[in-house]
Length: 211
Ligand SMILES: [Zn+2]
Image (cartoon, rainbow, N blue to C red; front, side):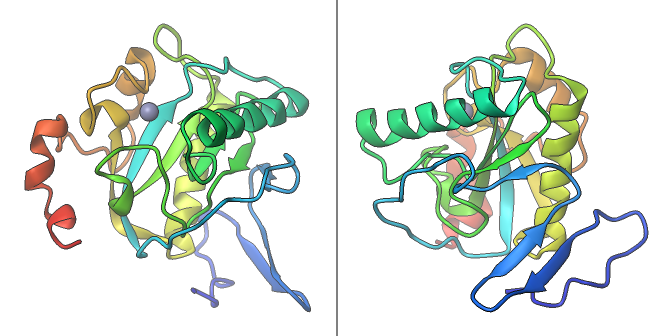
């Protein structure tokens, strides 16, 4: 989808897409680590998300703890994937993307594959996990900036709705996630939406009624 994205507005994230013989290569203007680069296992199964997607759900990992360099973050990705596939029995790592305290974005299920990160809300959202426990401290600026740049890229690529809504995991499920401090932070971000305020509101979410 969205093959004509080379014309970007000044100030918009610089995204470059070139067609190679057998696949498309995307380059973002922030460090991006593909599944192959973190040695992901193959997903057991996949379902497509209907794009453009109306919601972004922000998570923290709690565990593994924050990772500040590539090797540690790649290891964190593998450990989350192993936990989700082996202990939870899911098809793949649950998140669509993760972002490390090294300032890099890590490819999870990707933009257009249904995730397993927010029960009853996966069909209408992309899940982005900021690796670490952000209950009592704020993620490093580079981690916050990359998460925001990743979301902006999703809009530019047409995967996310231009008027997407951003929520914290605790707004759609009874959980502490994404941690008190990170939850306060994302309430200052563009597109933050206070509704739904809790899982009790989910029956009133219009997008879920259409599925
Ligand atoms: Zn969460």
